[in-house]
Amino acid sequence: MANMDSDSSHLLIPEVDNEINPGPMNIQFDSSDIRSKRPFYIEPTNIVSVNDVIQRVSDHASAMNKRIHYYSRLTAPADKALVAPDHVVPAPEECYVYSPLGSAYKLQSCTEGYGKNTSLVTIFMIWNTMMGTSILSIPWGIKQAGFTTGMCVIMLMGLLTLYCCYRVVKSRTIISSVDTTTWEYPDVCRYYFGSFGQWSSLLCSLVSLIGAMIVYWVLMSNFLFNTGKFIFNFIHHINDTDAILSTNDSNLVICPSARSGDHPDNGSMIFYTNDSGLQQFEKWWNKSKTVPFYLMGLLLPLLNFKSPSFFSKFNILGTVSVLYLIFLVTLKAIHLGFHLEFHWFTPTEFFVPEIRFQFPQLTGVLTLAFFIHNCIITLLKNNKNQENNVRDLSIAYILVTLTYFYIGVLVFASFPSPPLSKDCIEQNFLDNFPSSDILSFIARIFLLFQMMTVYPLLGYLARVQLLGHIFGDVYPSIFHVLILNLVIVGAGVLMACFYPNIGGIIRYSGAACGLAFVFIYPSLIYIISLYQEERLTWPKLISHIFIIILGLANLIVQFFM
Image (cartoon, rainbow, N blue to C red; front, side, top):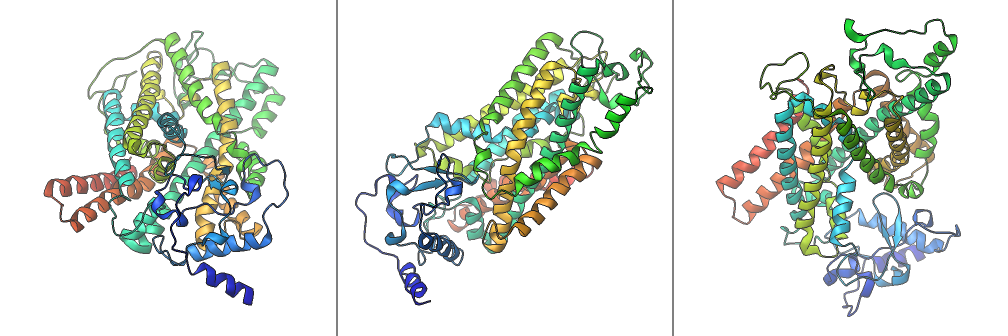
């Protein structure tokens, strides 16, 4: 006990002498206050590219690390009373940079005061982080809004979310009374709104994470079902597209939502009621009744791992999947051609009007599609040239907007109408291609494997944010972790069974988490800072209140669509 008291007394008295040459320890931060920003001990299980599993840090250092983490929660981030002193900070060559995804990378030498990523790498990281499951629902969103309205909404939402993200990036710099170089956005919210701001930002972040995990579970059930169906049909030489409304050419496009509709011109309907093998397969391989439960046996154990560093190595699959989707959509559009007619308000048999009042469904999807506000500060901290942050952020948003625009417009415009109606475009546009389509089968395999590696990472982030804040430990016990994972997985299974509509899930979760992170907090913080500096003008006040109203309307209207 005496030794612990002695250690604590050192921790409570930070050294104040100046360092002349901090060197590579000064990572991506201003060198004026390096001591409070240096990385500390990282558990070896979290370190990427560690070949040995021997504990290379003493138990004393590990205990000291946990104590410092505990002390850091007792004061505000700007309070330097509990800053770790030099004698407990490891040497420069032993420092690691901790990633929000649970991995750690050994520090390489870099220019003083800056990170090591070039602008090109930073732009690509932002683009890659934003490219998620929402891209599969963009064509459906355009169909709900109308072709012309949908294109305008994509552009306007891109600009609006970019501006709000810019306000998030600038939110730290407008605080001059304290040092904010190590702050994240929840710290800024806590500074302005107290514990309510911190916990509400945490809640919104959890909503986005759990919403994404639910969408992942629905999509993984879909992709796994279609993959198994493709293999079964291929082995038994079954063509099940004859029972579904579809095109009659070699580039087959189907309308699953019209399966139970009356379409006498659909051609022959083939059923296999006498095939007991097919009946057994359909009984045990059902998209909403069995496949979501099969995933539990595979993914639930992976969620209980203490470290997700193994899965973080597969992040490149996300980029490959998006690039393949772009290739798939381009190739399909070349073969199918464009099918467009313009009717501004009146729908026809095969075409939707250009302006539809369901356009808020697209704004809800896009709120999540453009959502990066909770981690943009972390991503930009690694930018080598900090003065280019706004430029790089803008370029990344432009590329993301163009990607969504390209996928959405090409799928909508090339959808074969006639013979199919544009209303047949599914919430996951891959569902408009039969399971026997080879190119779509490859896309589903890519996305299935990518999502199975990303899902444990999302679960780890949810665990860090919830259990870390409640218990002060991201892994308090296997019981706590198992209960949390069962709740999250259970929500995904229930949605996959009873509400497998990814467009609906995305727009609800996007509008909910975006309300605080995208619309309210960035605008309110900017208004308060201008008011404190006596620079608030009526145009700025009205424009930012209007942004808040848009966020509220975006959430409320989702429940009436």
